[in-house]
Image 1: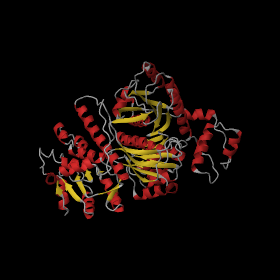
Image 2 (image 1 turned 135 degrees about the vertical axis):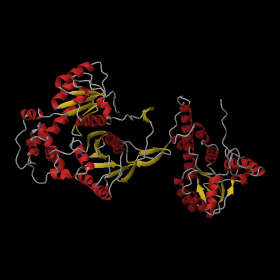
Image 3 (image 1 turned 45 degrees about the vertical axis):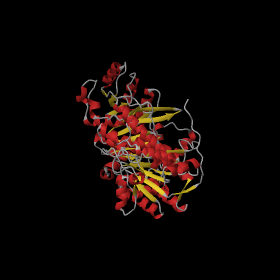
Length: 617
């Protein structure tokens, strides 16, 4: 059994004056300003190599560590600070008679603060450096000083990041040139986290180079900002954290995002980003509860669509691609999009902002905003509308982790790129790939990327570059088809002449008009509900009969369905035939593939096996 050391006691004080500081940083942002402040407080500065040179260039006096220890740097700089005068000065317990005696006999002075960064090992690996160069960028002296200073935090202050410099100055200013125990403890905790992350990165890289799996995975998180609560108000505390030394993918430009808002934003942004890359068209999505209510690319509107979406043909023709994409995405299922979180793949301009202005929505994520658009959006919801800016250079880790009930799951991120080739490489129905039009291929891509970011089981229907029905989170695939198919039917019947001809009384709000049209199509009113519904019209509408609906639906054609996994039976295809499906994209791989293919041939549908399952949980 390992021997456990006893605590070493000394003279404890809350505020410890800073009289000598050791500085060795690779990230030199703000270091001159901090050291200028320390010098103004008569702090003696010890430093090494490039850091010492930078401080002297700024006119600051500093002592080289080699002069302080009496031992020159050696072994190509591998040994600089590994010396008793350094680590003794950091580890010595103030007020402990034995430590004080040992330090005096060995000429060891007290070092009250260490300011350091570690060699940029991860950056070296990311640049594709050779094995030997990566090894050379493993810091030895830095982590040693970090751990010595953090261990002795009762008396010494460890500073590991430029974002701590202002707090150091403020603390010293308020405490007569000293630091408080509370701050030293916090900084020590962060330092040990940094050390753990650094060693984990080295161990992970090293074992990967050897082709082995690592025995331990260490992930260190930095709290970024608190959240009001998690999924529900009773789930407190809640917050957003970033991996240490990594950025968050978004910058908050306005509003206060919540837990579900940010889940929506992450999925919505990835969806539109991939649509943009796959189609070359501006893309938008409308998310609710981590599934898309709608998604679309910028395809011009037909006149009947303009009428159904309450936009004039002249106004539609003038819409920018971003505005057009969001208008389509929002109108896939405008009832479900109520209170959505939007995402746009391109710069948000004034046209797009003006569409969002009139809709009930919680927020938006996009790569950027024009000044005019940003002002419009910032004023929405009394200034509480959430505006996130996606960082173009953000690159997520290839492996993602999730904690559930004491278990940590890990998997490679679903970074499969859906392309035209997935839709054309294996067309199993009559006519082969030649039977696919460019519009059909586009819609297959749109629907497949959409279901990639929809809670499984899922299917999605697309037409003219937009989702027209999304079925999410059902245990049975045919139930997904029925759910989404009902949405397709509602979407298409919104273009029925009787629906377009509804005469509302003045003052009925936009969302109320949307809901009233949907209820007119559904027609299953209670007596009390019908009275309230009829009050919204200047002329009470004649019912839309089942026969009229069926006759109109017979005109629906050219619709695409995509499924996140194979169709296990032909029943899904049978049902899809009722809502105008002409094209099918699915992974394939079922024992019933032949039966499903024959079913598609029976209905004259063209089906592609993509070979890619897209479950999302």
